Amino acid sequence: MIFDIITIFPKIFDGFLTESLLARAQKKGLIKIRVHNLRDWAKNKHRTVDDKPFGGGPGMVLKIEPIYKAVQYLKSKFKSQNLKPRRRVILFSPRGKKFTQADAKRLVKYDQLILICGRYEGVDERVAEYLADEVISIGDYVLSGGEIPAMVILETISRLIPGVVSKKESVEKLDFPQYTRPEVFEIKEGKKIKKLTVPKVLLSGNHQKIAEWRKSHTRQLTSKEQKSPVKKEG
Image 1 (cartoon, rainbow, N blue to C red):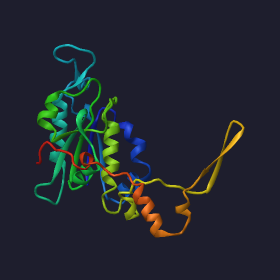
Image 2 (tube, rainbow, N blue to C red):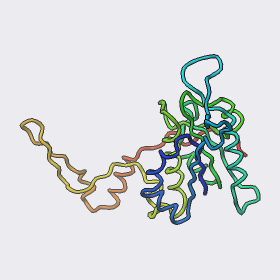
Image 3 (cartoon, helix red, strand yellow):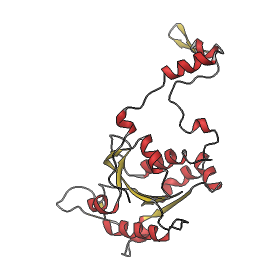
Image 4 (cartoon, rainbow, N blue to C red):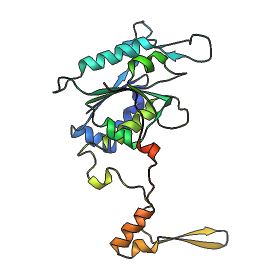
C-alpha cells in the first residue's frame, strides 16, 4: 500500500516515519510512504502556493492549481499490478467527517491514498468539492495544519495491514484498563500514604473471570463511531 502525502512542510514527518512501527513496516516493504513538497508544483519562481482569500479576511489560502497538479502527477506515477488501482484522495479539514476505526478498515482496502495537508487559513474549497474523494477530521478542534491528521491516518491504517503489527491480537487491541508490576504502588498525600492497587481478579489466575472483567470494562464503540458516511467511491 502506498501513502502519498502532500504538504508544504515535509520535514515534519522525518522523525515520525523513521522510528518504531512505521519504520519497520517500510523496511519490510509492507507499506510505502512518500512525502511530497507542494511547492514543487508551484509555477512561479518564488514557489508560492498560497494567496489572499477572495472577499477579504485574515491569513492566506492554499491555491487549487498546485494541489491539482500534484494529485494528477501522483496518480499518473502510481504503478500497480491492477489495471485500475483503487485509490482515495483525502483532504484534512476541521469541517470534515470524523475519522473512526470503521474508516480505517474501509481505507486499508485501497492501493493508494493521497493525503492533502492544509495550512494557514485553509484550502481553496474547490479542492474539497472536485479533487478530494472525501474530507476527514480527527476531532472537534483546530490544528495548524493537516500533518498531524495525516500521521493519525498513517498509523491507524498501517496497523491493519498484515505483518505490520507482530501480534495479531494487538492489531485492534480492546480498550480495557491494563496494569503491570508493582501490584501495590504507594504515593504520599500530605502525611498519609495512599496505596494504589491492582484489581484482585487480575491476580487470581482465573482466566475466565479475567476475560469477563475485561469484557465488562471494555469501551464499546457507539453506532455513530462504527459507521461513517463517505462522499463517493471511485
